[in-house]
Length: 115
Length: 111
Image 1 (cartoon, rainbow over the protein chains, first blue to last red):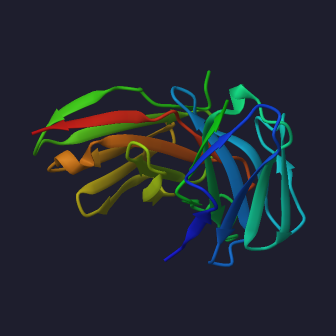
Image 2: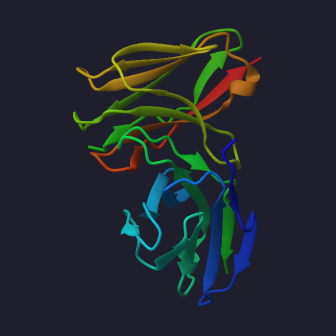
């Protein structure tokens, strides 16, 4: 079974803090994704990576950065946390088969609250 | 127009009946279509995917794809209270590895 793990289920941080969210997958997937999910807005892509050290901006990259130094690990960084970044953060991975044929597998999510 | 549209619901269905969930998409070039289920407070989990026009069945679930009309649907037969969840439709984006997500339909199965 594909397993995607995230470092924390719940996290509370203060405005201005630097926040690190870690994601690890154990199925040797090439592609990894970071989403945030807010009520009524669905899943929104922040960043994704299709290879080590590669990253691509998604739909809402402002205020975030990412790091992928190893294939199995994809980190999301909030450089200076703000209250509007309070959200559920979901990491996903997918294998690189034919483009367009890749189902994504999700981690359990991190519910981040910024005070 | 949103790229992937779903009725937000809630859709209320009696236990044992057929639940029908619909999704429309705007990109005619889309090739693959996914249905995910998400329980409250949990992450999405894949139920089914479909690539070809027509029906694909897996147990109580049937995915239906009509590329000419640009819609994909999910039927759940013999609905159970445990099927109560939000169902997300996702469509591949162009030729890369991204998925475009609908906002989800909340399904409630009433005992």
